Image (cartoon, rainbow, N blue to C red; front, side, top):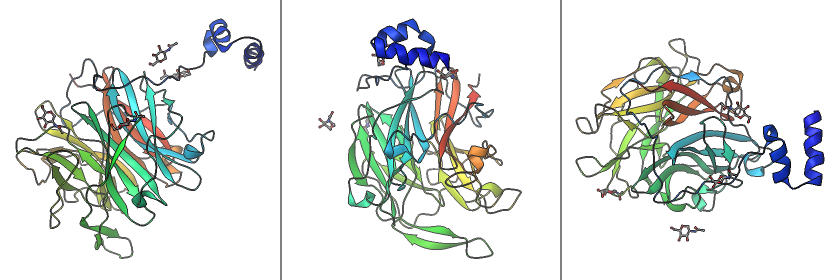
Length: 368
Ligand SMILES: *[C@@H]1O[C@H](CO)[C@@H](O)[C@H](O)[C@H]1NC(C)=O
Ligand SMILES: *[C@@H]1O[C@H](CO)[C@@H](O)[C@H](O)[C@H]1NC(C)=O
Ligand SMILES: *[C@@H]1O[C@H](CO)[C@@H](O)[C@H](O)[C@H]1NC(C)=O
Ligand SMILES: *[C@@H]1O[C@H](CO)[C@@H](O)[C@H](O)[C@H]1NC(C)=O
């Protein structure tokens, strides 16, 4: 209390620089955004590819690392479901923000330690197009290929969710390419029945996780879907093909994923040359998992040997489940939802939405 008093008196009398030099413990955080351009370098300096499964995640005791910010109208109600990428030794988060009207925009934040984030003052993506009006821009997932960031996000018009693409070279200035999978026919879980049943759905698409390397067949692969997982392919990352009669890429297997399977962060290439896909699942109440409980799990993909699935392997139990108050109670109760996994300073950082309200992180050691 006394120190706060001193600071406010000092800041009246002296320029801020002098005040902070006199009181280093209270120094304001550097809020200048680091410059990212096509020469910027992606990834941790001592990066070591993972092998499957990647275990040992512990939730950070200081969670949530990000809460809604009442000072900014656009992120005043909820901040959650971030994607992450390491550029020039900085962890960057693109996160979903909502105001009181629940309009979604995408915010940007950066950190030099993986825990403490500084936020950019305005959203980097917001609703401008008809397919985004009345809902907004949701749930980003980002990769970088040849110096360009490719971000999938959901454009929601209040009725239909459409998976969209935007690109950037600096993380701030984004160019929109519109909906990329306009003709998806899939199914959705039908809660109205006593047995697990699905009803058909048309034109709805969400949650695109792209593998950031061209496959030997000349295409990039994307695992997408928010009820069941499917695969789409692309030659240029901007236009995507999806066979409307496709079978799901990964059938439901585990108790915790019986309601919904939804893609997670962009898959990461393993030491053995396969791909580790973290994904999300919602339970229906069987096997000890609560109805509508969202958890995070892992599967191993081989896009060369099994391009149409199913996964080579899958963990039977989640690596992350809701347990803290912030994860159990919020805009949507009982949710951890993961779209971000990066290696940084010798650890894995997995960022996740907590009950569609705030952001937490879980950390695991890098495997030897
Ligand atoms: C603040 O951060 C910017 C961007 O990283 C950097 O260029 C600048 O030197 C930093 N300023 C201070 C005082 O550390
Ligand atoms: C984050 O910053 C706060 C305040 O500056 C500090 O107390 C805390 O230790 C930092 N957390 C980490 C993990 O460094
Ligand atoms: C944003 O990116 C577009 C496309 O690359 C470019 O034409 C435009 O000049 C950029 N605007 C700013 C403010 O950097
Ligand atoms: C990225 O660069 C590689 C190597 O030049 C090239 O094969 C690939 O087509 C490029 N990808 C995109 C999306 O431009």
